[in-house]
Amino acid sequence: MASDPQLDLSFLTRLGVDGTHLSGTSTGRHTLDPATDADSPASLRSTTPVDGSLIATVASTDRSQYEEVVARAQEAFRFWREVPAPRRGEVVRQIGDELRAHKDDLGRLVAYEMGKITEEGKGEVQEMIDICDFAVGQSRMLYGKTMPSERPEHRLYEQWHPLGPVAVITAFNFPVDVWAWNAMIAAVCGDVIIWKPSEKTPLCAMAVQGIVARVLERNELPEGIFSVVQGGREVGEFLTTDERIPLVSATGSIRMGREVGRTVAVRLGRTLLELGGNNAIIVSSQADLDLAVRAIVFGAAGTAGQRCTTTRRLIVHEDVFDELRERLIRAYSGLRIGSPLDPETLVGPLVDADAARAMQEALEQLKASGGEVLFGGEILDGEGFEAGNYVRPAICLAENDFPIVQEETFAPILYLMRYRELNEAIDLQNGVRQGLSSSIFTNDVREAEAFLSARGSDCGIANVNIGTSGAEIGGAFGGEKDTGGGRESGSDSWKVYMRRQTNTINWGRTLPLAQGIEFDV
Ligand code: UN1
Image 1 (cartoon, protein in one colour):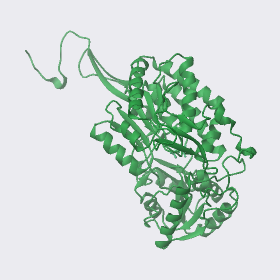
Image 2 (image 1 turned 90 degrees about the vertical axis):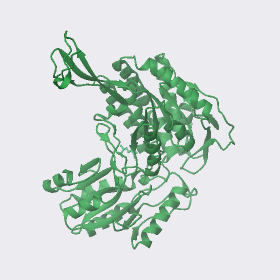
Image 3 (image 1 turned 180 degrees about the vertical axis):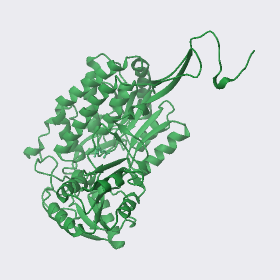
Image 4 (image 1 turned 120 degrees about the vertical axis):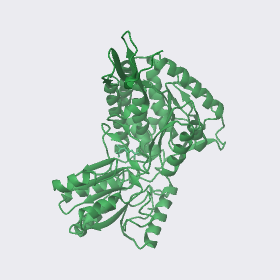
């Protein structure tokens, strides 16, 4: 393995995550000692999807370490909330600069630990840099409104204050970026952040924490503005049940989101949920098929189908159905599948062999419902594919109401279905429990506007002539229905990380009551 020139692992050293057994729990630059030894079941195993081999074990956070992390976070919050927001923005600007300096290495680590191709790994780091830039600007725009008071010599306005320690629970598929969406915005808002990354990608979080820690140190800022806890469900529950954490932002499956939502709701905390998608593209008879094919292949096969915005369903007008199907099969036949570290590769592995098996089960269920696999779907074997997690992206014929089509299978499976009238296509598009992303390909402005209107797509994201994945950070990101309703990243998502205070000031010499009430004493 080491003799393979593509497996130059020096980036691990440069990112400070080389070693065989690591402690991933940290507050700022302070790494808490491993609570467990490497063989303990409480250690996480970070394996690379490249060949399934072990990169390192990482100690899980135990209860006493967790208490230490929260104590430091609370202490840091008491300081950080008083720092002027533009000064907080300056710290985030420096984090953006550090990320720029480490973009290649961190992008490679993302590829190595999670399995997306290096180009997309670097794209993920670029998205972190973009959100840093956005957050710097936002730090000068935490606007509250001033309203006219109904009473004379009164001023009525609102202002926004930080919430406190915010938990950010992230998924393996975007192991660094989704943290940044949350953490960079929350940081300029004056919150402190406790991150629980996926158990499958602990090293990515450690590397990011190392980058952030340097900035904290240079600016002599307290430990605990940014912390990391590592572990599975139990560590997640430390956070969701903890009344000291006013907001839990969680990305992952619908099942996980329901649990997080329920647990946090019981203590009347807030959640920001970004859960599964089941995203469709409608291809009209008026579509530019050249554009559509490129967008569909990137959306459905890119990231090996492991984005929450992945295109899973294709709803095609019957007039262009046969042509589009053939063009897609041709495009899929040319997709280079291989190591995510090879610059020639377009489709990397699935995260692990379990995911490949889940894909096989989904295809079996599809066939049992009467669907058909038109292309691909198999697990690849042979040299380089020994780990059992490389698959050929699949194109299938399906009906929207097949049970498996209603599910999000985190793998590259594209379900094709046909339609005749646009309303029918929109009903199919909306006819799933999830509501994240959606698109239409059409050159007909009436069709496009109908799709975007109140009777159109019911998703949080609705696009025209671009695919379902690859959203920019400037917009609010998230979806409706079982996707959880949360909005992260751009637009006014910052408000989720703050508490709103309404202030009324009487600068007169009398005490008029609102609503004209007389109450003389
Ligand atoms: C995710 O899959 O959780 O829109 C996030 C996109 C990316 C983010 C996806 N910017 O595809």
